[in-house]
Image 1 (cartoon, rainbow, N blue to C red):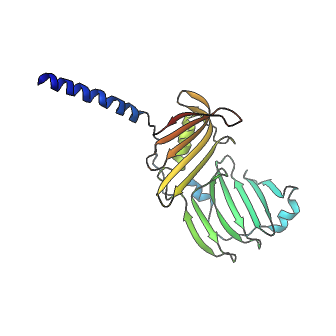
Image 2 (image 1 turned 90 degrees about the vertical axis):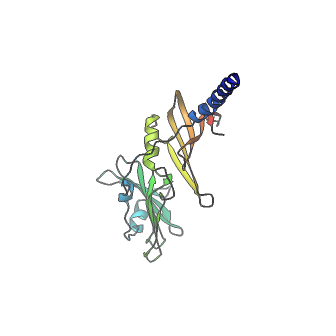
Image 3 (image 1 turned 135 degrees about the horizontal axis):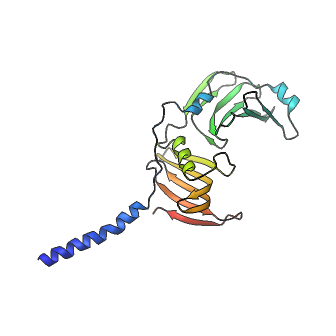
Length: 228
């Protein structure tokens, strides 16, 4: 009886080891305490404003762009058409965030809000009717558990150049499944490897569910990790 008990304990110990090892392989993105109002929301107000069509038409180039710098160092790009409406992107000096604005053909504001760089809409966005009346306010951060600050800190720890064109953040949220996903692309390191990486993160658990190393210009990839 004593021998059977010892054998049973040995079986339990060894059967638990692979499971613990598997759990240890799953890395999580650290969550930081953040303020109630993110800094990038301070960049945008719900005020009515208009697009200066005359100034744009007088200064636009052949590509229908007008790019200029304000005294405070902010870079502004304006573009658009009379038939479709106009747009502006404002990048404050040394900022990771872009203020994006859309305007109706009559020059009145249509919508505006912040983005990480210019490829991931974040924070509070405001929508207006053609007469300039505020009709909707949407907090795009609300469905997500992970914050932009969490992602930025993760990228810093992995030696990513946040201002590089190689660095991008995208996220999506499924209203049906209530599931959010983050996708990061950056050049830097991941654990003991250097290179270009694509990383997918589960927003609910903060777990990294896939790590892919991008090997070349032709799109060759090496899957370093994929959660089962």
